[in-house]
Image (cartoon, rainbow, N blue to C red):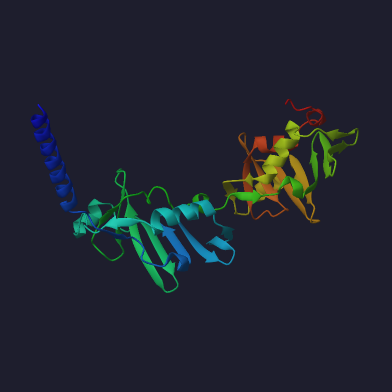
Length: 307
């Protein structure tokens, strides 16, 4: 019995050895870096298709979008692009090398997503497509060889401003706030912060606001991360005229003696418009809920939070 077990064990070890040997001898597909530029020297990223385009330029302050205006780029999107594209690898074996393949894989210039990455005078120019697969296809400009990359560039890093622009309008921490003055149709009031906490004051009343009061917390939270993904940069007289009778106007005074003014006006049934410091060259679109944070009745600031 023991002899039979020993024979079975030897056979098992032999089979395992054969498996390991064959696995190690199995040809591994060779890969190479998609971008051979030094990542630290990359200073420009250009992405475009038949309809739109974005140009990102690295400045001393970080990445910016350059066009009719200069915008701060969204650092999270740029970081993801570096991880997914700049650091990507692809198999050296092409899936096609023919001119017909360029059409078959939708990599003709009018169909593809164009990506050019530059580091000084050096650059890498690629065209990407996706045929409804899990991974993208691409080719280098002026080349017929088509490769498949294990990732998605075509549908993730599309050249729309909203995808790349930093949506942040304001970021003011509570400790930086000195006062918040609000004027709207039903009331004018001021919230003031000192060492003892927050105080509410309007024409009829003045009182301390409890710590963690819900209405106050909603205002503070949006000022810490006031973002908008939709905006208009075209001068529109009708839109600007709506700010002649704003839904609400807010003046935010900070401890560094600066004042930021934000004004709200109606856009449609679903959204409102907002301008910062009367700069009508940029009109942001925000939800009505954003205005509601500032236009609460005085009683809302009297509420004691439930702990």
